[in-house]
Each structure stands twice: as structure tokens, then as C-alpha cells.
Length: 505
Image (cartoon, rainbow, N blue to C red; front, side, top):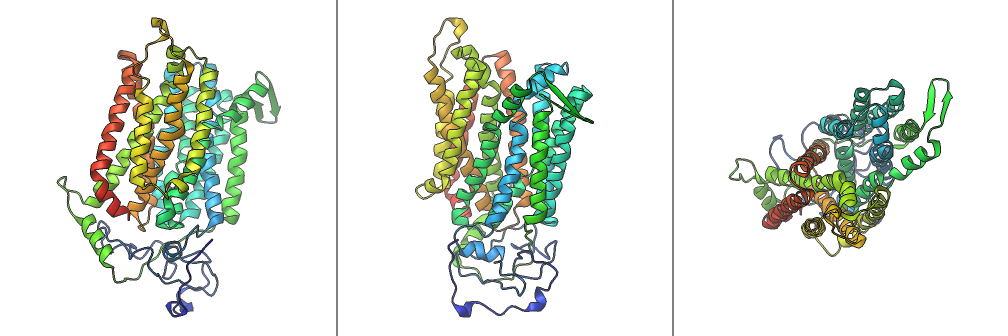
């Protein structure tokens, strides 16, 4: 990792009494106490006061027991990651969290049918996962601030491990209610997106944060778009076969759950042995630069809605999260049936097209660092949502196969490419990066938790809305509504661009 060296006189001698031997975790400036003595932003909890400019020559804390740089200083004066090993472990946590949704996806419908359920129960079972994330994300985010990242992630991963083992017993219990319970518990255990994004924000420089957030999102995106292949292979290999090992029954319905339990156990072991906790403590007051003062004054202004500009910007980013993730969730719900009724494609063929373009999306996410050299977050948000909206509205003019229409497969491929391969991954990831930058050096766990909950809520509400519209009108009307939502979101971003840019700088 490249770093910026400060002159020797800028390195004050460390008072060993302020560090002690109580912890080897990286700390922020002061004695490692937790919870923090006060906010690193302000002594007033609901008041936005930003720290000194991140790229200034902040002091470096030297500990007699550790050469680790403090969070507040090292990441703001150096390029790269302050904790590369921690970042890799966080990627593992995110991967298994969304693999729990992806790997079991191929078996969900056959399992619901085996339990005597129908399409309605399938909707409840799928929605239960997002519901679990909604109720747990804010709490886990808050705990990451109060108790630290390590304890929070160990607790959530342990919950995920237990949920996987319980899910493996669904077919034996033979109850759709039990299935919904285990899906909810899986959602609770994997509700760590806010925590993991907050950790990445802690260990990255602001100017490079979107790139590393993109890498984390690529892992998440691959988790639920590529890993269904593993569930399909396990189901195909076992089919009607069943193997018993004591109380463990290994069949086509439980194999995926045991596979995920194994990965969860491995991740839990790594968290307990290799992951270094990070602690926030009181930040010493410093003289603000004129640029920081101007930004703080802007953030504290009251809008016509009675909230500060800072709060309005955070709320706006959460609504952008809802519109982008909700749009893709609607298409995930109706995409296969749309391919059948408008293109005459078999579900396997349509699923393969979606998976291939999902892989393209992962590549796009891995390229976000390079895109960030040429485009701002605002430009990538507008560009990504525009491409996604064009791909969606292109389907609204088609007629169904039952009406005698012939729609070539390449149109479906191109539309999916614009949505899954380019538009959604770039636009949505830029929204995440913008939100993190606006939050700044404030403890991000709680706010990132609410941000993740907003996305999970969209994954429940938008599919329901789309289902009703498709049932009582037409599926092409759904695409027109989604296009309108994305166009309105782009208008908001364009109008608010100066303010959002100023707060994120």
C-alpha cells in the first residue's frame, strides 16, 4: 500500500499511558474506550459537524504495542486499504450472506411444492429473507458502533450458521411456516451489508472509497447472481436420492443448506481468529479549514421540509437505493415469465441469459475504480440509471407471443445486458459510494444499516406492486412505471447535484 510520509516533526511523541496494554486493536486518536466518549463529529448528537479535511496532514498515532495507523488518520492520508486482511474477511462475510439467497434459489420452488405450498407461499418464503434483513440491519449497524465490528459480525455469522442448519430440516419438518421462519432467520444473520460497508468506509480514503465499495458490491452481486449454479448442481446430482448419517439427512433439499452451513462455520472461525476489531474514540478538536467550514454551514442549513440539508441528502440517497434496487427486484420477479410469454424462451434459457449478464455486471463492478478516474459518482449514478431505464422501457413496446408477435431473442439479451450487465451494477454502486462519502468520518454503522434496510424494503414492496399491476393490467405497464421511477430519480440527482457533490467532497 502506497502511503504518504509526514515530516518527522509532525509525529508527536505518544503518551504510553493513554494506550496501555488493554487492547491491540487499531484506535482513533485517544484512549481505547468503547462506546465513544463523544461523537467524532460533534458534542451535539443530532448536529452535523465534519472533521478536518481528510487529505490534510493528519497526525499519526504510534503505539508501543502496535504500529497500526489510526482509522481517522491513516486512511485519510494514504492510498489503498488500511486493513487489507480485514477487507478480505469482510468480502467473505458479504459473499456467504448473499450466497444464502443465491444457492437456495433453485430449490425454493420445488421445496415449496413439496411442502404443499403454491406461488403465494413462494412469494412469502422469498420475501421472508428480505424481511429478516429489514428488521435486523439497523440494529446490527448500531451494535457495530456500540460494541465494535468483531462482536457484531461474529454474532450475525453464528446466527447464519444456526439458520442454515435449521433450514436443512425444512423438508423433514414438512411445514411452510417453518420454511418462512428459517428464511427470516437467514435474513437476520445476513443483514450485515450496513456493517460491512461501514467497515470499508473506515479503512479507505474518501477519494478511493467508491472503488472499494464497488469491489464489495461485486462480491455481493456475484453471490446472488452466479452462485445459484451451485444449488442447481447439488439438486441435479442428488435428485431423488437421500443419504442418512445419524440425525443428518442429506438430500436435494438439504444439501445446499449444509453446504452453506460449512461455509458459514469457516467464515466464523476466520472472524474469531484473524479479524481485528476497530474502535472509535473521542476525536481531539482541530481548527477547521475554510472549505470544511463552508461544507458544515451548508450541511446545517434547514430545508423547506424542516430538516437539515445533510439529513435531506442522506434521505435522498436512501430513496435512490429504493428506486434502483426496487427496479431490479421487480424485473427479477417477472423476468422469467416475461421471457416465456413475450419471447417464447424456456426458463432455463432465460435464466442462462440473466446469469451470463450477471457475470458481465460483476466485471463492470470490478472496473469501477477505473471508471472513477473519469467520472464522478453523480455522473455514474445518472449514467447507470439511464442505461437501466432504457433497457426496461425497450420491453414496454413488445407484444406477446399469444398475440402472434415474433420477438427475436437478441432483443431480450440486449435489454438484460443493459439492465444487469451495465445499468444497475454501476448506478446502484455509485449510490452506495455517494451515501458513504456524505456520511463522511461519522460512525457509519447505524446509517448504513438503515440504508441497507431501505434496499431490503424495496425488494419486498416493488415485486408486490409489480405483481398487482401485471395481474390487473399488463406486464408492459410495469416497465413503464419502473421507467418513470428511474427518470424521476435521475431528475432528483441532476437538480441536487451541486449540493450532493459539496457534501461528498
